[in-house]
Image 1: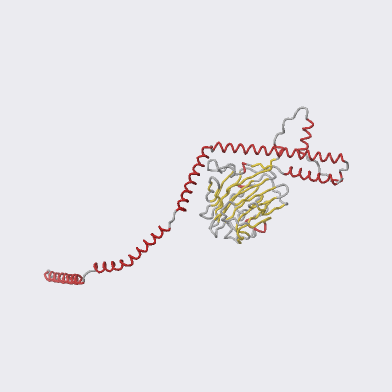
Image 2: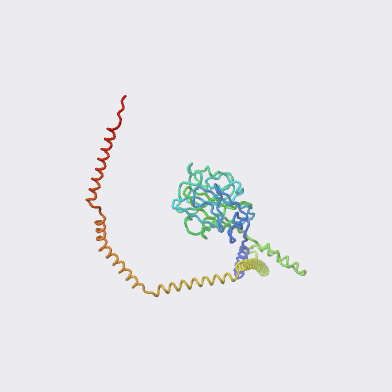
Length: 441
């Protein structure tokens, strides 16, 4: 086959493959939270999720769930989906924040398991027995654990923290393992504590690989892992005696949405064959063939025509997806404008302008005046006051002491009077005793 035809065919094949792979993502609202303005419409529960904790359930706020509080320690919290994920390919985006004292401790788990809440509940990787599925562990501990730490944690501390992935087919009991780290299929270091911002973890499962990213940076990836369908998602956390506080802000599950889910346009009566051909190209791309298999110019142009037509259908499907997303965004924009009318935005803008004018006037007043003279007068006043105190205070204290001191003559007079009173009392006592009648036995 001539080289002039091979290069365009390869280019078109690459474009067709890229258009077929690039698909829009659909949010699974029943398995997600944090995508709306409030986590809960009534402040008591998250729709589609079950909240549990020990000894108290996690605290639910408008924008986050506090799985373990800053105080006291030894707390557990967990949230689990009430429905299973039925898609083979999915992406999970999780945002959390961990904060605590310098020597604080705890761990956070992201679960994808068959039995979910019924089997795991608030357990951690160090207290769970057998389970089927995958768990991603985020903590500053790892390795062995003894009887003292068996409740929650390991004993060998990682530098700054780390993320590890574990798999189980139901045959391994993790709480009886002396070296949990040896069972991890992937790990990376990540200092997640006291960052002052939420951390973002993304788990992605495709037909070709499983991948974990942290703050848009790759953590680990494996092309040998394909997780099953119809499993539950969950997040659990546990704190030590000196606790770390774990807060969950967002958990979003998205799945690929194929263009074929939209209904095709109406078919004109006189074009049934053309529509069937379009559907065939839309669902079944042209088979890949080597250049040596296409020998005639007619076959080359036919193959090029088929691939161009398939690429055109894929571009149309992508355009439909973009239009649908644009329509949804416009609808949400209109809802936002309806909830917050323009008068409120105008009033807020006026208030901000008023505050800005006040700040500018204060800045001009401070920068335009010279306070050197006032400071000099204040310094002179303080110096005069200090000098006056040093001059007059000692003399005043001496005069007060000399005028207020008691006289020696008065003191001696008081002592003599007291002695005379004692002597008179004794004489009177002796006389009364002598005059009293005597008793004889």
